[in-house]
Length: 484
Image (cartoon, rainbow, N blue to C red; front, side, top):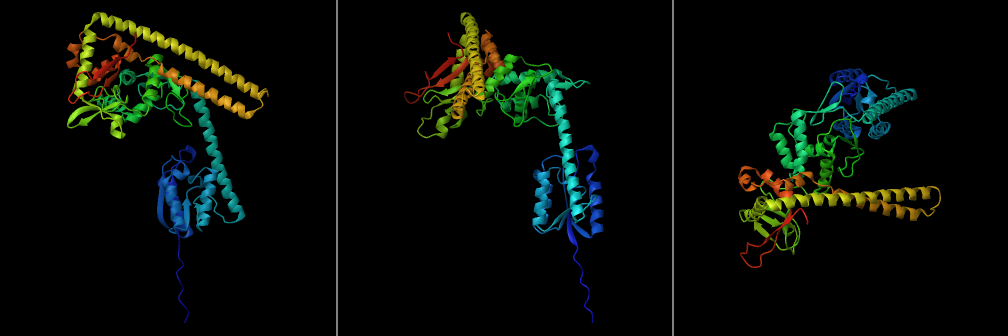
């Protein structure tokens, strides 16, 4: 009696789909899947799963690619079916890696609409199609690069996306957008007035401004907007990676600025000084950032201590061997308020204050001009050094590198000093225009406005250790921002 025929196991297939961002190859995921399923049926494959990705992301950053490759490597499928070879990748190296991983797993990658012949001619045809996909990717990339470079040369952003505070006209030019432009300028001034990122973000959201008319702002989004320099009439380079504003290259844009150059320079300086030192607790503790421990010289932060709002030495909270200097918040803040009220009520002292701020600004400018001259000399020296090495006057490469590194380091130090000398116009103007009736205004203004007056006039508030138990008077020293 003849043996019954055994059923031949059908090969298992997974389908991988990706929507192309290129118009000539844009076909819906539904259409791709339909064609892939028809191909699988003709080949006698059982489709066990379907994976899809969006248009963006590098090949090995797409979850769908990882899932499809894992299916064949783990033995859950024998073949990956694509609509076209380019759906998996347009990159030669990525394709070589994908093909090798499939071969090692004993699996295959096939196209539903392009040749899959296993002969030498078939493999050659597949290679041609992959090479064509790579060529198209590079060609389109070059076109985009040309477009970006043309826009930058015209003083426009590389891409034509929206910019907060601006609206585009029919010609694609960016124009200040009324209330949003005023808000953008106010964000810079508020930051210079001492506000932190979370406070700025809350202010934006409370006033009804959204990201592209939909999403609420995040503090990182606000930081990116201000760091971009767009509001200062600048275009900042963000590639190959996004650098902080004091290290980023900027070029003039064709659009109108909403802040002046002095405000921008002050912002960059303030960002560098406050980098990785965010202002915390500004809503509840108006002296955050200027309260200083009179024992170790470190900053004091606001926190609830023994149930009361208190300024506490920050180092003592994280370091052993440091005295924990504390003072109840209302006592320190009252000492500051009394000092400010006394200053605002004294007409003679307020006039002297205005003169001091003018004098201090001039001194800063003189120092800044001196440093700029030193930077120019360093640039000239470095250029001369490069020329001498290039023409063979300097033959010792090691000596050249040592000299070059020293000049570069010295120049960076000068740049850092120059940033620190940038005048803060918000604090300067606040100190110079201190109202004579501040004591009457104080109960009517919020903590943000109070902090602005405080930071405009005061460099630091030192809280000294108590000389005996229970001492509270005589422990607060106020250091003004100006000098005689």
